[in-house]
Every structure is written in structure tokens, then in C-alpha cells.
Length: 149
Length: 182
Image (cartoon, each protein chain N blue to C red):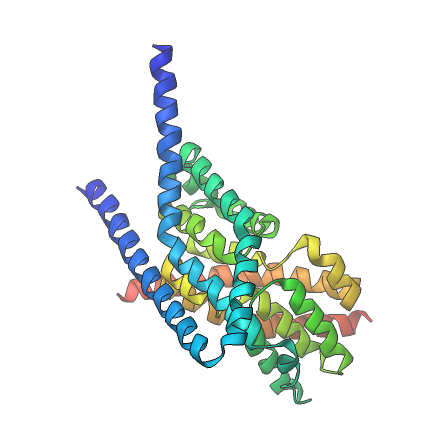
């Protein structure tokens, strides 16, 4: 009786992990595609190009910051380092914040994976909202900071 | 009848997803082949960078597969629905914020797990909240403090949590509206 239950448990565990592997296997081609796309982005778009596009106009720079953050991908550390460099070049803090927030919340490079796995509608709605929220969050952060200081 | 149809729908979705993935991967490989002719030096750099990313995410991928297996073993749709489903309330939002902040690895390795959870009843809004809060990385906060100072980091983190909840509600509202129309 006990032996039978142990066998059932074993079967459940094996089938659970098989199901997990199969589920992950379905998503693997698109994940691999995103990794290859990230490689292309890293080697073809150097960070100095990213910092050269800011103009000095607050509103325009904020939108540009969000746009560049959205199309960029990779570790968040990179966005902090580029953000730090932009601050040294006197780019406005609102634009830098929009850039950093969009970098980590909007994912144009990951979009094919998100749309393929979680659905096109969900991915579109989430990324568009994240783009506009990155602008609002950046304005809110800098204005609050100004009030406090 | 409905129970029989649901697994078939999930299977069809899986097939569709795999086909989409293969087409996407093929198009990227085609792009690589094209760049091999046009920019062979930069392409080598790109391949090296991709390999570096792949090696870097390997532990996270293994963790996610293990986590998905454990979830399949112990978590059923009723549990998912209780904690992050339609009736989960504030507890669900709180859980999505906390797990989003605490989760590690690149965002895209979490998609398959989130898809499985959503298929089991997780709200789309909470999926969005989880994904947004992944942007808050506790181990990286000291570096951000180094560049921008403590007040900036505290305000930004707080506003990002608020923005994630706004986004979650907006996603749900839009999805509800679209499904009502169709």
C-alpha cells in the first residue's frame, strides 16, 4: 500500500518536471532569439551613440530618454553607468530618470518573446503603459526631490 | 465537455507559440547570416556577447525550470486563484510586488512560468505588476545610490511601486474592455 503511494508520488514528480521542461522547451526558441538579438544590440550600438542624441530641451530629452531606454536592453547596471555619464554631460535628471526607468520596464528587444509567450495584446498594452509611466515616474521623482531639497 | 476543450486549447496555444518562436529564431539567424557577409568583425563580437549572455542566464534558466517543476507538483489552479487570482484582493497585489522585487535573472526567463501561472488563474494585472517590479533590483540599489544619492533612490523606488500598481489596474481595465467588445 505504502509502496504504491511512493510510486504514485514518484510518477507525479517525474511528470511535473517533464511538463515543466516541455513548457520551457516551447518558449526556448524565442528566448534564444532574444539572446541573439541582445548580442547584436550590444556590438552594433555602443553607449557613446546613446549619449550623443540628447539635445538640451527638457521635454524632448525626456521623451528621447524614454525611447532610448525602451529600445536598449541588458543589465540595469549599464543603464546606471550611462545615466551617471549623462549627468556629467549636464543632461537633465528627468531625462536620465526616464531613460533608466524605461531601460528596466519597457522591453522592445524582449517584445517578441513577451508577445509570443504572454500574448500580443498583453505585451503591447504593458509596454505602451510602461513607456508613458517611465515619463510620469521621472517627472514625479525629480519634482519630489526638488521639493524635499 | 469544457474540461476536455481546455487542455486542447492549451495544446494549440503551445503549438502556436512554438511555431512563432521557430519563425522568430529563424529570422534572427537569417539576420546573422546577412551581417556575416556585411560586417563579419562586429558579428563575431555579437556572437561573443550573445554567448556571454547565455552563460550568464544559464543558472537562472535552471532555477526557473526547477521552480516550474515544483509549482506543477505542489501548486494547483485553486491555490493560484486563492493567492493571485480574481479573489486574491490586496494580498495578491502585495505578493506580486514582493515577488517581483525579489525575483532574479533577466525578465524574459520568467515569461514561461508567468504564462503557466496565468493559465492556472493568475490575473493579468498581477503579471504586469510582477514584471514592473522586476525593475527594482535590491542588490543594485547601492550602485544607484552611488550615482544619484539616497533621496533620489528612495523616491524613485517608491514611485515605481506605485506605478506598477497603476499599470496592473490599467492592464486589467484595458483587457476587460477589449474582451467585452469582442
